[in-house]
Length: 127
Image (cartoon, rainbow, N blue to C red):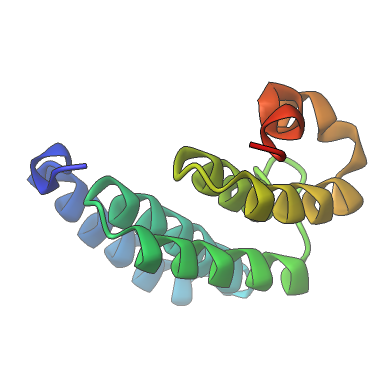
């Protein structure tokens, strides 16, 4: 993907997000900081992916997934490991995606219908 796909507003939004995180540090909710840092890592990974920095994006999303594995998944969070699988599917890497979806389903077993597994990773494994 071309860098022009990521508008300047995305960078501005990340700066605004960072400012909000600084405010969070000073609030009674400062204990939520690791979770919001995780969300930022996910956003940066998708930004990198949109800019065509695929290997960096995968590494960044893997970092987010590993961190979420440690923190635990909040009730309304999308599993970062599932997003990593989705990213790998977009990159036509179904075997790697399968590994990530399998871990994601171990951690969130009721998400089978929402994962790339149900959207076609199983048949594509043998391509």
